[in-house]
Image (tube, one colour):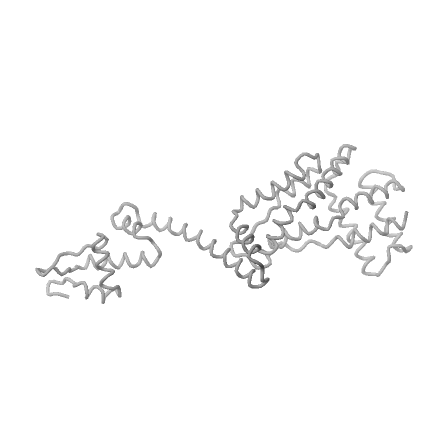
Length: 310
């Protein structure tokens, strides 16, 4: 420091840890102009310039660009405004980096090929709204023109993949599988058949809703039979079938007869595609929900027992 309290550029570099070249650049661009120059042309800086340079260092360490730093120093924008905008930008960058990390972890764990890796990366870049639109397009194509069960359609439209900002490998894998499943032509055709069947039943006066309680009754009864090792073609199975068909007759206000059993069989056959259950299981994995109970073996046993009882 000189006798008049001014710092040479070298002393300023030692104080701040910056290189002389960097300080000279900041001076030349007007961010930290020198206070004066010696007769020999050497730059000198006062305490205000030192404080200004330290602010520049802080803002640069926080990731602000030189233009943003200049706007703060020149009072064109408040530090709070610039900090808020920069924080928002960092949030976006952090989300992007987390998604990239998730893709890389999944690739490392599964050994995916380049095509699947590109698909994962593309799908993870979708916003929440874009993910919702992907499901909406699938539902419009499969349920859009059919007068299907409105409660089911509303449930499907409200249940969309909601990836966390830092998804796990399992969530990434499930999201890729779900996206591929919704684009599968055979699956779409199967869902359209389900929608058409529901529309047919509604045209015949069925407005009974989603039947959660009935499904749970079937699941509990058949699960108990499966746990007991009851074969579908045994008297014990026939008793389970009789109990369940009586419940169907009550829910749908129909006689408990052979026609009802044939109607139940058709209903089970229409809903038998295992990909429909897989759709819900994938959604649960993506959204971090408890896994839904496995119904495929339940309905397979119930179908076999119904056929045997007939």
